[in-house]
Length: 188
Ligand code: PA5
Ligand code: NI
Image 1: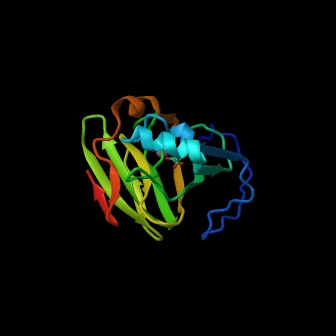
Image 2: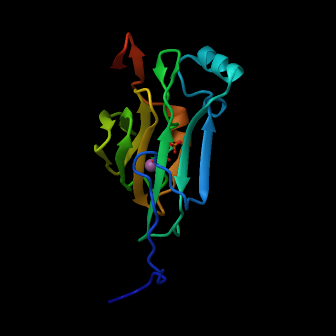
């Protein structure tokens, strides 16, 4: 058998399947409302939210592995509930830098949608709730959206060398947004 990759010692870590807590995580990414300028339809509503409290929007906990082919990166994504105007809290969303790489999201808690688009303009959305696995195929940009009233917690796995490309989504946006209107989830 040919072996190019360095031999790594196997490991196991604990993940609380209810809260998403990963005590051994060493990378902690936090995005507050003020990190989300330009992403929501109602920019004034976002500014009001920032002025009032600039709430924590979402966090990602990672226990990194080498970012080289063959390894699998994994993390917990925790997106808090709330709305900007009537638009549900969401992640920035991204393509992978190596766009031909997929991702698995296993939802552990909460309710939401995974919205996805391709560069050619296809759009899809899949519901997320505890026990749902969403497969994001290669070439699909992806964003999670919290439509419930508790944190939307997912366990994500993707090729460790995939990388995150935010720039294209900043420019293109997604063709549809997710709103809560009179208690109903509306994607339009
Ligand atoms: O790799 C992923 O797709 C997730 O871990 C996301 O990075 C996480 O949900 C945060 O979203 P974003 O990277 O779009 O800000
Ligand atoms: Ni991703």
